[in-house]
Image (cartoon, rainbow, N blue to C red; front, side, top):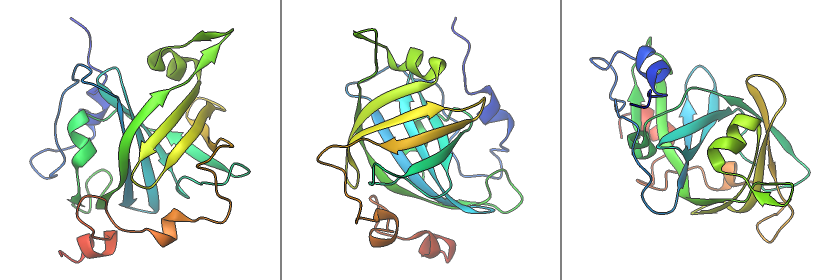
Length: 192
């Protein structure tokens, strides 16, 4: 039986106190998804998640994804999350791991476009090797991006030059609301 990659996720949470889903790895169903959750914890950041091998591979992006190909954004790899987390919105209690408000800021599907030596590279292998090229088809973000590992945890998230690129667009400020409920993190924190 394959060992679950969710051990770290489960060990960091007390599910009697947090509304986060416990979840389990799932088999692939159709096009792989991505989700970006805006998370107002000890500091505001965006959790960027790609469905790979039945879980959500996750990176914390402090400044959020950019639509400008000249901008490189730090993306700190965090623990894998269960697929059920893709629709999680709510408040993680203060004092719990990641305590703060969470919304689903963007979501959609993605297509892995990683190639090495002219041959396609499976997403799981690309993540393990530290370089993933992919195309997003989401509600707020579109087009090509890449994630490249700089060291053990730190990666760079970069927008590729294509029709989805726009140096003037700032979706973090112009579109702050949830794609699920229309709420902002501030409204979630206020209990609305």
